[in-house]
Amino acid sequence: MAAEIKIQLLQRSGSTTEADIRTHRVLIDRPVEKGGADAGPMGGELFLAALGGCFMSNLLAAIRARDLGIAGVRTEVTGILADSPARFDAVEVSVTADTADQELLEKLVEIADRGCIMMNTFRGKLDVRLTIGARV
Image 1 (cartoon, rainbow, N blue to C red):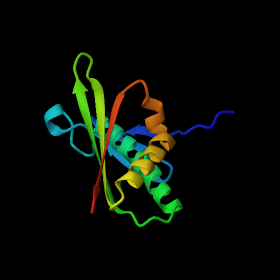
Image 2: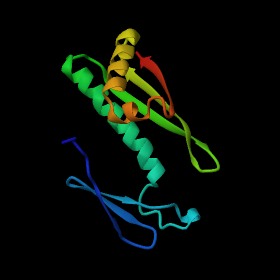
Image 3: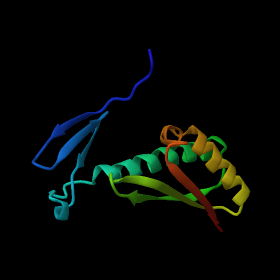
């Protein structure tokens, strides 16, 4: 049997949904200007957070497994929108960290990229661009 990840979603108001994820609850809503109550992030924002969170989890695990002195890891995820139908046309993932070893950071980012469920799902389907910068 294939492994699976399952979440439950429940309507909480006219525009708000609650996602039950393991022991966590996340509200999903639209901004007021789009007819929502702004009780939580939009689904598209959570999509970007999920991609970034998956990537960061793998990157931090790669750093921790090697007991490296890399700290201050920061990832910024930007979704580039297209119209008709509304969708993400591309995603930019920018990674910076406190390290003098740019080459090592690039290797770790490659490891995280290959280990991330989200990145693997979208590879070849969505233009995902990675940029890397070391802060000394």
